[in-house]
Image (cartoon, rainbow, N blue to C red; front, side, top):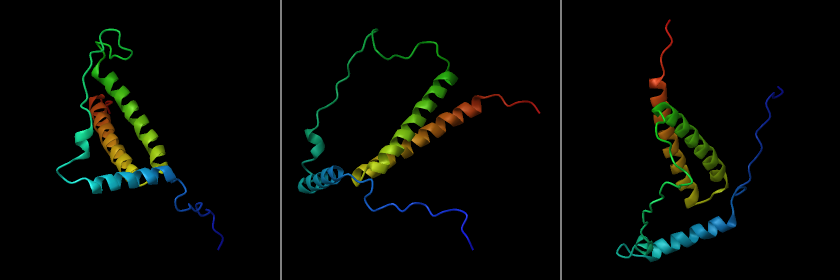
Amino acid sequence: MKKLVPDPPLSLPGQFRTPEHDIDTQRIRLALAAHSAETSILNNLKDTVPMSVGHQSMFSVRPGINAEEALVHVSLLLDCAVQVSDEITERASGVERGLIWSMIHSVEMARAVVDSLLDANRPVPPR
């Protein structure tokens, strides 16, 4: 019997892997293993500081935008984030891949909430 649909191309192990990512992942693992619970790596990070952007901000949300229009825009932004993250995940390895996947999952859930709000707010056509 002849197959109508060809087999998908074989993906080689590590085809999308970058050696630099693997080296960095190994460094992170070694650093985490070397630190005890008392001396966290997070203690070395600087605190973020809020800054006032004023009225001349490059990006601002206009006052008076209705909720539906804002939610549509948020949904589009979340869709873009999912698409970019999917592309990045294919090339990531180790710890990065898990972190990106987790981010994709969170963004998809946020988009589902936004889309659900939009669907609930749209009028149902009469029958």
